Each structure stands twice: as structure tokens, then as C-alpha cells.
Image 1 (cartoon, one colour):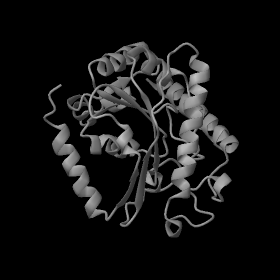
Image 2 (cartoon, helix red, strand yellow):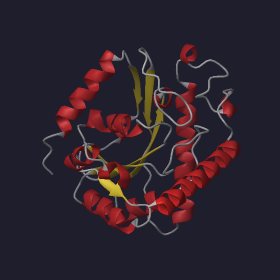
Image 3 (cartoon, helix red, strand yellow):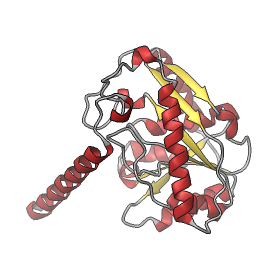
Length: 255
């Protein structure tokens, strides 16, 4: 694939990171292969995760093609940018096309990024995940590599005001590759969930304590923070889904 826009976009992003005085904790990046296909499975805590998730492959000299919701590609500005970087549009109503696109990218030797939780976790713990990630990796015969992102939620996430103040630490931890066969996608997905959860716990434990005091809103309740519990987060997700459906219904009625 020809990448005309991707490298300068990365350079611009890194310049912004420096202007924001951001510090990076990077570990395990050697697990991303320097050649051949690989599927990165990232946790999802904030709206900027796809920007920072790509840094996991940067030390290996790889560009990541992220699977992202179709609505971003429909945007008049975001759409052309996403397509120029060869990211993959996901239509939640018809996911087969994006599945095949991801498999084709991987078989062609690309690195693809996926957020198996599909939506942002309000609890900041790994939510229930579907079998799509292990099915894609198995179909393409590529390693499935868990990635933990932490600190991105402090800038922009659900239910909280944006905060782009300087000096935040962003942690990116890459785990050891999994090698799903597709013979038991449910069991292999449980293995992926366990690997991602363990990686997030390790990342939280290694995060600077002075930036993450007890009671922090971005810290899971299980770790002493004030974020919603997974059960509370499920309730909030359900409420959001109902409100969105009601808005769509009202819009249809008006039009």
C-alpha cells in the first residue's frame, strides 16, 4: 500500500504530543513483528485510543490499519483522512465486509488494529468482547497481540470534560502474541480477554502514582478509583443505547 498521508500525520501527532508535554511508558513493543501480518487487540478507554494505539507498532517500523466505525468514514473531513491511511470501516449493521477487509489486509502482510470491546469502557476495565478478533486472526493465520492503553481517558472519554492540559503520562504495554486457531472461538476469546485484563492491571500498577491518586475518576473502582463498577457501567451503557434509539425514532418521526 502507498502511504502518502500516514507518515506526515504521525509526525504531526508526535509534535502535538511534545507540545502537550506528554511522557510515554512503552513496554513489550518487541512483540510486534517487523514484517508480516499481525492483529493488535487494544482495550478502549477513550476517544483518542486509535491515535495512541498505533504507537505500539512504531518501534517495529509498522503502520497500523485500524478498524473503526463507519460513521467516522462518513465525515467530510475525517472520512478522506481515514481512507488515505487505509483504515477499515466497520458497519455494525453489516460486519461481514469489514471482517473480509481485515483478513485481506492481514494476509497481505499488514498490521491491523481492532478494539474488541467495540465501545469505550466506562469502568476502564476490559468489557465483554465478541469473537471477531480471534476469528479474524485465525482466518488470516496471524498472531493476535494484546495491547493495553492507559492515560488516554484522562484527555477525552465518555461522561467527562476534555482535558488537554500538559504533562500527562500515556502508557502503552504490548503483551505476548496469542495464536488462535479458530477451533474454539469462545474459549480463545476468553483467553484474549484474560490477557488484555491482566495487561491493563499491570499497566495501572506501573503508572506514576502521583498522577493517579486513590479516588481518581479514571481509575477503576477495583483499583481504588471512583470510576463506575463494571455493573454500573453496563447500566449506563444500556441507558445511553435507549436514549440514542429514542433520538433516532424522534428524528424519523420529524422527517
